[in-house]
Image (cartoon, rainbow, N blue to C red; front, side, top):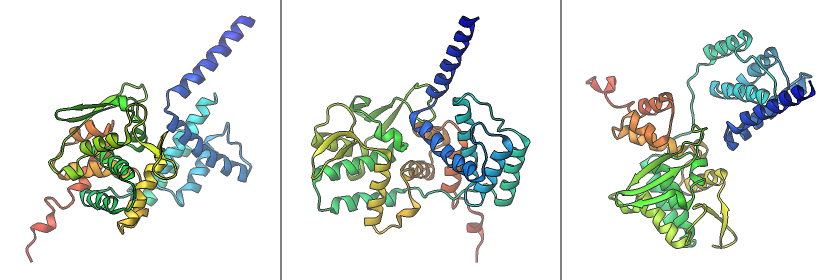
Length: 317
């Protein structure tokens, strides 16, 4: 009997470890951060946060709805559910008191989101020009240009961009192949390869900008995008995803653009929007960005085509 209890306990622990391993580290951190907010809400009102019950979650969703988007409410719901699973508890997030509350909030507020703006070609040119004008070391300018142009050209998530190692690169006659070993939507680590061709305009070419950065930095292995210590001393430390956000916002500010409307995601959404404007279909955009669902890509395409075949343009005054 004791052996059976031990076996069940061992299976339980292994199952919980498998649940944790099924999610990327950044995803787990996001779950924990979201759950921390839920925990603070519960503590303030004298509720149990773990385990909790659908009624409490529904109250929390109502509380959040006063200042948050529908997408944020859904994400918090997923986070609360996943933390319960990881800790070995069950929470019915499909309970009518939660689902019907969400439906009511959606009808009241609407589900249209106003996200951060995409960085378009005009913005990219401004940023690269601003970097070139800076009175700083060439090696720093080379790194920052490579981050922006590679980030845009590959439609990368911030976490994917900073995770690129030298071994993930393959320069070929047509351009550059970059292997992404794992990403947000690739939980099984199957990986994907992105191909970035050479540009006719060399100033804004992602492939040439990366070649210049690697040449100046002498990086032959490990992370390709690294931090600088004081001065122009390059460290072995990988940049963080937040560093990418700050870098973009800094150059937007120097270019005279209000940076609060942009984020690290603006490179990725900018690629998708510009590709759609240029006539790329959703399959080819998804092949580059790694989107698993067409929903977000179709939104980029709709926004890119808002002035194409516009009914108002057919009216003659």
